[in-house]
Amino acid sequence: MKKNIDRREFFKTAGNAALVMGGLSAVAGCKANAGQAAAATSAEPGEMTYRVNSVNGDKVSILGYGCMRWPMIKDENGKDIVDQANVDRLIDYAIEHGVNYFDTAPVYLQGQSEAATGLSLKRYPRESYFIATKLSNFSNASKENSIEMYRNSLKNLQTDYIDYYLLHSLSGIEAFNQRFGDTGIMDFLQEERKAGRIRNLGFSFHGDTAGFDKLMELHDKYHWDFVQIQLNYVDWTHASGRNANAEYLQAELDKRGIQSVIMEPLLGGRLSKVPQHIADRLKERNPQGSVASWAFRFAGTHPGVLTVLSGMTYMEHLQDNVSTYSPLVPLTEDELAFLEETAELMQKYPTIPCNDCKYCMPCPYGIDIPAILLHYNKCVNEGEVAKSITDENYKKARRAYLVSYDRAVPKLRQAARCIGCNQCTSHCPQRIDIPRQLHRIDRYIEDLRKDTL
Picture 1 (cartoon, rainbow, N blue to C red):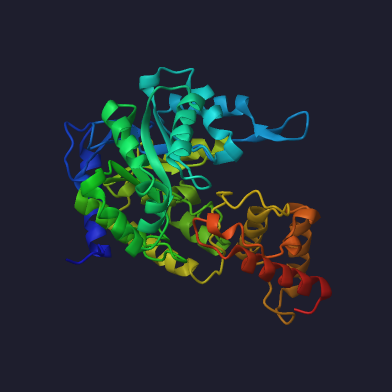
Picture 2: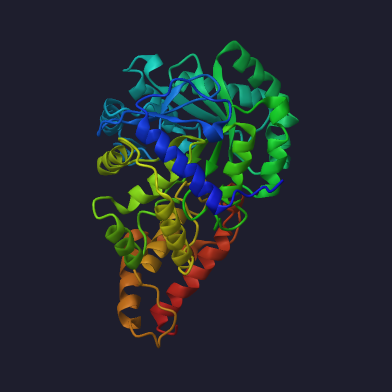
């Protein structure tokens, strides 16, 4: 059987979804095959689009709130803490505008995300929203520690059940066995699901196709209710590093009737901060829509998608995404082809696939790894990375990079401090060789400072 869904078949599926969504005001039922699941949406402008969970009938907003990037402030001791008042304001707006899926994890925001999310959501009736969190047992995968982490999540979220529980960041069968399969924790989680304290059980995935295939072989045994994958219009057929193309992952889920939850629809923000000529191309095609809206419409177009997560730190981002999905207008076949051409153009720009997840932090030597990598990507997109001293815009690019680097990253947190301990690399879901990239950037900066590029 051909495993990759080809572009024509995707266009056909997406086109059918558009017809369904345009002609229905609600879904009368849901089908077992997630690939054929219809979206429940009002035809009226300004109302959120919903998808129906084919396992239990949950009506889930197509826009899910990713709680990894809540706004932060400094306390009286200079420590970074969650800005709870701002979180409340964001969640109030989200719920008021139909968002009902909130995704967090014990490790987000250095352990602060679950408690902040739970405190804010506690102000609303429990049945009015869905909570997703994860078993992030990276450092200690013993059954005892995993059970303690699970129970702490219930406590921090101030709830007695979790709607969507994930085995956090799996890459294949080896990681699954080390953290879950060989520890006995899966028996416990299945009992919790049977008791209703876990309503849906799944996993989030970062890895290659071979790793995904092995995890899919476990479906008969564990009956995955959903799977969280990285999907966007670049990663659909141009996934970088050791990550699998989303085209393949979604097709494998569709074959088994498993719905997907989408992470990284903006590829760590890179699809909202594209090079100017790419932004001009997108705005020319749809002057009313934002650059980011193209990525969100792409992620939501496939009918096998249950919800699309976005880590919305700022109100303007939340408002834009709510607008995009109220209601979702699925991409046409022509628009999908246009985005594939756009993705191909973007492959010419050598950005580092950092998604600002901060899993690499804290660095034992105080280096601000995400800030360094994101600053580099920003300069690439804005044409401020010179290849040599002979470049026409070398002087302008040199000054712009050096000035903005010192502003973006304090000197004691810059790439020059990396000793190559490699502690960060194993935590990176994008499989970036972080020390190599930091050393490369540091050499580039030294060449700029010495004027020897």
